[in-house]
Amino acid sequence: MGMFDEVIFTRPMPDGYTAEASFQTKDMQCELATYRVFDDGRMLKMTNGWTEDAPLDPPVDTDFHGWLNFYDLDKDGGWHEYNAKFTDGRLVEIVPANVK
Image (tube, rainbow, N blue to C red; front, side, top):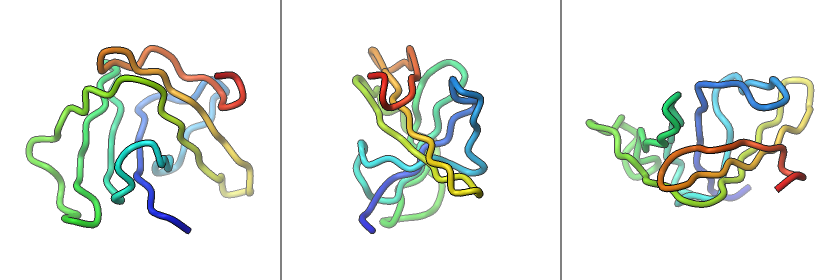
């Protein structure tokens, strides 16, 4: 198993799924950092991951632009994978991974 980052969304996915804790992604720095996407669509880096697990004060706006792939395995073994499109640092859509 390789390195990854975690991303937390404050909204359910298009199919209604909500991860119990967070989703995993390999589309950021893969340093075990935690990111959070807020209701306003901004994605902030909340922790530095393995380099320092303490929360960042203040969190850092990633100004992410492009597609972010993320996924989770639910408690029943179901796979949930999505792609989120960010434009100029704001989330504009989330689609199931096979729709991009």
